[in-house]
Every structure is written in structure tokens, then in C-alpha cells.
Length: 342
Length: 246
View 1: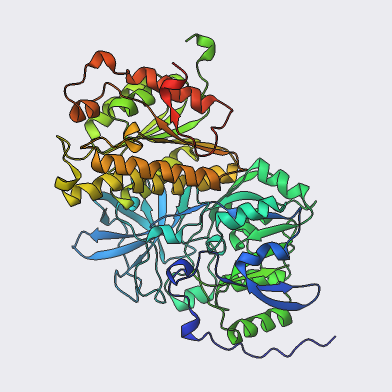
View 2: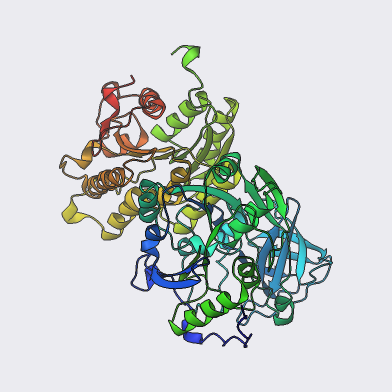
């Protein structure tokens, strides 16, 4: 078989970037479109997310990420009076790793001084240093009240294609539980309980893991192009591991679920209960030991998300799907349409 | 109640709104005695902290969150800090209620802004809190939500204007939600605690004889019965605390 020649992918037309969640575009939350890629048949079909059940079968297991999105962009005042925006990326117990950007678009990075004090929503913290591996991330002392202060004054992280602020609840999934994600685990954002309970009645079960997402962009094209890798906190609870090991087909809702489950997967193809930090990087050729299918959004080829898709799709089919998504006017990013890979 | 019945809520996490006074305070203490971990909220921090200290002395793991039920940000913060601390909520009691201006004015005389306030505290806040927490309950296929209602919801007492409207709406919310939860392990109730000897009751009816009013502590025991009971209430039915558990 001759592989398709690799042509450069067309760039994403600006109008295909979803600038509002579906439910604020006159649709329902689950009213987004669904591209269904069948790897066996090498076919691509076009449907609605609400029809998800017709592509699954009784016995399938959907695994979602129950991490709740936090308003991770918070204003901070430097000792010289300058106002900056901190974006929480990694939250360790004693130390937070934050991006420091200008509060106004295009949110260019701002250099802090080691040892400098910052005032965040009325409480003080100190800059301990920068990360050796990712110098754009500043290590600051964890705020004494934990995320309480961020919840008092923070805003959801918003990129340029979303022109107006969108309330936090639209950045949350309908099953959000513990808070901790800097950005929405967006593949599941469009799922509704009406749909999930329908699927449950159809014999398609639901299980959940936890993975607190970090930032998808460090606001620096050169750094972002390198696909920076940082640790993310995750937990695969015992009941999720058991459910995953029991069923014939596991569909991950979002790449965060793939990352968590594959971190917890043994060479025997079984998931085990586990929690901790994951630094797993998945890309072309990565073995998928427990995940059989993926529900995911559309993100730009530059994003590390695309690398992970290469673990599921060979280049010719990925190339075809990307071109077809653009031709068929699918919407992209966290408020956009979805894609099911089976 | 014998010791054998105690700690029926061991290992459970309950969030109680309006926990600084009256029924909310009594519920916090009763739930603590039964072994529940507690997230408590109220608008006024000093009274809330006093209740939090009291339940901590009973050995409960407790989180006190000052929050205004009219603020969407406060509600989101309440939910997030509670889940950050306890990782889940098994029981949500939407107890915080706003009576409105006292002495109670006729609807024809009611200040419109006060009407909005009452609906926000008594209807919108329970909706938002329930929505933010029920997802986790549905994932676990387990959980109880109790909305505290009043006979004002079903009787047209003069002067109870916005409060009556809000409690009727809360009961409508409960009925609809119960129907949508059919087949799941998540239960929801609208519970009418009856006339109780509380600050709110004194504000509404200053001439009532306290001897004829229920004690919040006794009513709280009925709530425990309901939460600990494995039998779901029939769809659409409001529950009167006086009918059981005393």
C-alpha cells in the first residue's frame, strides 16, 4: 500500500474557531457536531454528538475526567505597583508553577524577579525561582488559603478567539467534581446528563478518572512549538480500573483520560488503581494498552494534542480527517465540535 | 436515641447552607453527631464560626465558608473549596432562606428588589448549588439533595408574598428534578420542617407562642431519618418533617 504523499496541512480558517459554547450559540450543550472516524473501515462519517449512542454498543465504557475547571487566571500586583496576570499551571502542595503574563491581550510573558513579593487578591506570596526545564513557569509559594483566593477573584483562562468573557460554569463539564484544571477538559464539555443517562440505559456505562490539566499554551510560539511537557496530577480510582479491565471497549473522553489511563496501564494490558504525577508523553507509535477509542475536540496541528492523535491514527487518515473537518466547516477549540475515533 | 443509632452518617460528606442559625445550625450539630464531615456556609462569618467550632468539638471534620447565596461567584467558590477539601459531597441541604422584608408586606406593597433577592436566595441558589454538585453524585450514582420548603408554598397566606412564591418554585424545581433523576441512585426531596422556634419565625410571626412551635433539634432528627433511609420518597411528593422521625 502506498502512503499518501504528505502535503502541508492547510491552515485553520479564523471563522472556524468556536468563539462561544454551543449553549450560547443557540444550540444545546450536546448540540455540537460529531465526526466519526472508523479506523477499521477507514471511513469518516458526519453526525451530531446527541447521536453518540448509535456509534457505540452495549458493554462499551465511557471514561470521563471529573476534574473541575478553576478560574486559573488571577491578577497580581508587583511591589512596583505593576499589575500582571498569573496563570496557574501546576499546583504542588508548597509551590505553584505559574505563567506570568501581561493582563491585556495578547498576554505577552512578563519576567519576574526571584525573591520578589506579589500580592494576589489581598494575600502575599513570593517568587522562589523559575523552573529549570520550562523557564517561562515561575515557582511561587503556594497561597496560604490554597485555591480559595483564585476562586475569589480569578477568571477562566481565555484565548484570543473567545472575544468576550464567558461565565465559569460554561467552562465546566456537567460532571465536574474536584477543582484543579487550569483549562477545561474540553472533549467532555459538550456532554449532557440527558445524553449520559440515555447511554447508561442503553448499556453504555460511565466511569471517571481525575486529571488536573495544566496550560495548553505558554504564550510563546517557539516554546509552544516544542510541546513543553510538565507533570499533571491524576488519579485512577479502583472502581475505574476495575471497570476498564472488565469491558471489551474503553472510550476515553478527552486526551487527559488517555494520559491518565495509559499511565496507570501495565504491560499486561490492565489498568491499576493509581494516583500521582504523570509525565507520560504519547505520540506516533505509542502503545495504547487500555484505551480503545477516543472522543476528542479539534485542535490545531501545532498543539501537542495532535501528537497524541497520532497514537490513534496513522498519518494518511489523520491528514484526511483534518482536511475533511475544514472542508465540512467543523468548529475548533474548547467550545467547538467533536470527533469520535473508533 | 441510643448509641447504636449514632454515626449513621459516618464517612459521609454533607454541605449545609444557612448553617449559622435556626434549622441549619441544628442540622449541622445533628449531622456532626451522626459522624458526617461538614461543609457549612452562611452570610455572616462570626455566627458561622461559632457553629463550626461547636461541631468541631463534637469531633466533626468541618469547613466553614462565608458565602452570599445571591453571588454566583460565592456559590462556585463554596462548591470548589468544599470539593477541594472533601473530594465529594454526598448530602446537600439547601436550607438557606431569605424571608424578605419584615413586617411582611402585601405583594401590592412589596419592594421589587427585595422580591428578586428572595427568589435568588431561595430558588436560584439551590438550583446552582445542586447543578454544581449533582454531577459528582450522578458519577457515583449516589447522593441526596434536600430542599427546605414551607407550607407557605401551598397556602396563600397574606404577607408571605415572595417567600411563598419562592418555596412554590423550589418545590417545582424539586419535582422536575426528581423526574429527571428517575432510575439513578441520586435522591431529592422537598422537606417542610413545619413551624419552628427560630429567628426567622419570630421575624415573620412575632406573636406566635413558642410552646406551640417545633424545636429545630427535633426537626433535625427527622432529616437524619430521611437521609439515612434507603426508601426514596415517591416522585413529586413533598415530605413533612412532622410525619416521621420524631
